[in-house]
Image (cartoon, rainbow, N blue to C red; front, top):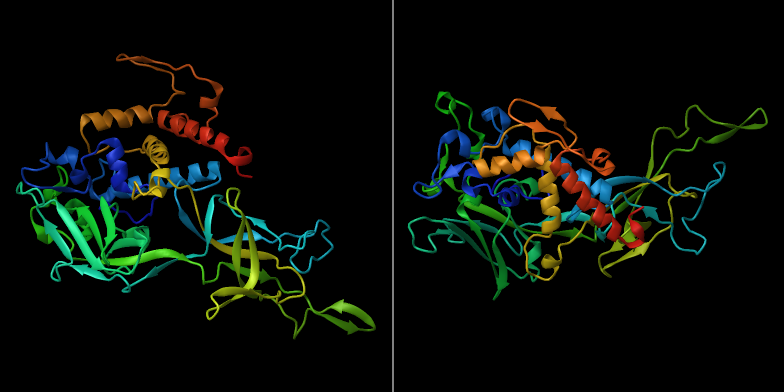
Length: 442
C-alpha cells in the first residue's frame, strides 16, 4: 500500500498502474529474484522528498493528485468520486429587501428554504462514521485472520488474505486500515483486488507489497543512501504489518448534518423616552446562537439541499422537525454531506473502486503534468511523463531540435494550463460538463 499524509480519490497504487510503474518498486521494495532492481537510483520510490531530493516522492505525488482533483471538482461542480464534505458554511437565504428579516424558513410554496451546496451529485446527507470492533475487528498474523501465502507455489509469498466474521451485507462499507490510527482515511490500505462476503464472513485479499510496514518508509538519509535509496526486502515477512484494523465506513444519517447560527441582535432599552440600542452591560454580544438539525436533498445533481432544525428520535428512528430557536431565519448554516460521481462498473458490482477509469486517467494526466521533479522509473514511464509535461504553448529552438506548436484558442486559454496533460484533462472535463442535466451545475 503506497500511502501519503494527503488523502486522494485516486489511490497512489492505481496511479502507478495507469503509468505502468512497477508496483513493488513504487512501494520502495524488491523481492530478491522477483521484481529485481536495474539500479538503486532509478527504480525505488521514497516517501518524502527530503529522503532523496533528485526524484519525486510519494508525498509530492499525493499533493499533485489532490490539487488535480480539486481543480477538476471545481470545474465540474462535483467530485469525480464520492467524498465527504465537512462543515461547509453557506449563507442562509435572505429576503430581497435588506431592511427586512425573513421568519419561518419557508418559501412561497410553504416548503423549507433550500441552499446550494458547493458540490453537486449529492448521495446522502450526513457525516463520515466508522464502527470499530463490531461486526468486524482486528485481523492478526498470530491469530490466523491475516495470512501471508505463496498462492501459486513459485517461491514468492505474494498474497495477503484477511478473513473475519461479519453480519454486514454491503461489502463496499468494509475497509482495512493500518493498526493504531483509528480508521483515519489516510491510513486506509488501498486497493484490495478481491473483497466478498460469504457464509457470515468477509474475505479481503491484497498483494504483499500493499502490506509493507509504513514505519520502514520513514528512514533518514545516511551515507549508505547517497547514491540512491535502499529497497525494502519483501522476502522478509517481518517487513510486513502483523495486524490490521477492519472497520465499517458509512454515512451517519442519525447525526447532525446541519447546524444553524444567528448573530447577536443588540437589545433595545428606553432611555430619555426614546428606544435606543443598548451597548452596555447586560446586552448580548459576540455570542452566536446555535441550533442543530438535519439535511435532505432537493436536487441531487445540482447540489440543492434543504437544512431544517430537527431532533433525532432514536426510538422512532426518524428526525422530528423543530421551530427555529430565534424568531427570525438564521444568518448562516454549516452542512455535512456525501457527494460525487460513481463508476457504473462499481454500481454494477464489477469494480471495487467507485472512481471511474475516465476520471482516474484525467487526474493522472493533470497531476503528472504539474510535477517538477523526475520520476524514479524506467525510460518508458519517463517518456510518458515528459509527454504529458510538454508545454503546447512553448516555441523553442535548440541545436538538438526545433519545436513549435500551433494550437486552437482553447488550448492557450485552458484554466488548467497549456501542458499536454493539462489540456487532455481539460477537454475531458469539458465533455463531461456538456452531458450534465441542464447544461451544467450552477
